[in-house]
Image (cartoon, rainbow, N blue to C red; front, side, top):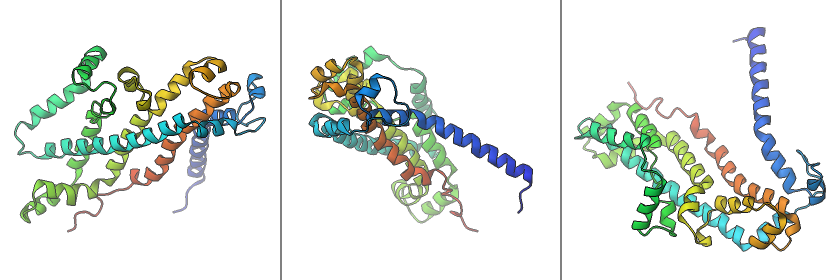
Length: 289
């Protein structure tokens, strides 16, 4: 099919708009990268925008040499993986039973679950509950309270609803139970939504710091974002050098930017790997005849 000149012009306009939006999104990241690779002389003169000046890698070297940051990065990565696995397991186990019409009290259960999206007890009751459960200053306080997102569960449940009933009915005729249907039918057909929700959970945990700020006082349990938050709260290079343990306080600004890059790039690298699952029509051709 040959496109008309109007269609081609429209396509080029859309491409141009997308390029402008991409550039706008990349500008802050490029600025942080340039500042992390520039010397403090040019930073103090505010001469660094999108290209580093006085190129040096001292900030990255200092971050990699500091055991506190390498430990925090590794700890946050493991914490993110564990939280994502637990959250996906909880989401699937909550969403799958709710697609069965024969489940007693399904409407009541749905209403109670949705109700939690609109009403919350508040910060102080949450803190008191975590204290009464002896979860303060433990890694579990960063995992259990947010292990299930009702919004993500609704997305998963809606996707399960979209899978043809004929597949489930055929499995039931063959004698398959609910667990077998989930493992052999629903999960293989749900890779796209599972990848999307896993990315949501992973990004949420990787970028989260408010729960650690409220519930955790042990430095060994600080995720990377809370460590970064503590750095950015220091306004001078001297404060950074004394409070955060840097050996060279003169590179405070570049150290901030380098830490931001270390905290941002890992989660950005995951998105392209999962991108192919977002556009896959997994149920096309699932039912024949």
